[in-house]
Image (tube, rainbow, N blue to C red):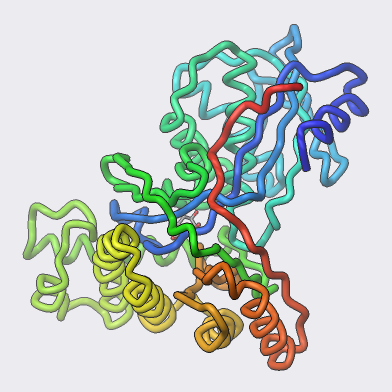
Length: 386
Ligand code: GLA
């Protein structure tokens, strides 16, 4: 996918050239899983797969949207955008447009063509890439100054209200704010962040389990509700807490006894994962590969045992990776229930690593595996013409 493909795709549908092209990336999360909606910390990186949007203005307040990958079109009148939760890709476009307008922006009508190469259903945030790419195009098209954090928040509200997923802010935020060669340490309460360079000797290797991951399926929202139940109960003893972010491991040990076993497990994952994010950031800064690997292993174990969002395929991928050449660390990434693992691998061993994991996975599951070697990429941007 490149600018020329987007321009050509637009031209074929709308029979004129676009006036601008944007792209926004998917993401991989290095550590800090299911912490974002608990006001906690995350450490994702944007990746080299992206959604591209080509746009040109219209005189009416209507969006004519064409999905290049599916060869389908929809019309969205901005003054009567239609119902949410249609369980269709247009939910994301309608949602981001409506939420930008609710945020006080008056959008112009536009012809929009989009397509992308973020593997869908793999847990690499293809929907956030779509929201950020289309959202950026709509703002630029309407002459509105870009505030990346507000754009990310509009994308998150689109997920909540139009797609029915009560996601946190991580995916949209990293798609909007990512920086090449860097991961981003985000405080999901204040939305303060800093970028951390990734060691040049390491590569990000993403292994797809091939098990489709479906966030809108109620498990994600159930986890979120269990965390809220934990906070409501702990507030009896710790009245000032707002979220699991405010609870220490010691406090959890002391006060959680009256919660159901399952809710205790969920809380333990979140509280311990927040601590791992801080330690991981420090290990990155000191290039301490042993510690990076230990923290990723502990994160995976916690997601498998306490949060119960892994699956046998993801566990197998982490096991195979841990014995493969060049491995620094491996864990599941994203919401879970299928999707991908993220692996930090020594650059010199990437080929041997891939061969080992692919062969072991195929032998175990009979499934041929997709493996992506990627580098941390920039966040959403306009792509200027030649
Ligand atoms: C999905 C959500 C994110 C985050 C992760 C789990 O990707 O969209 O907000 O909660 O799951 O860390």
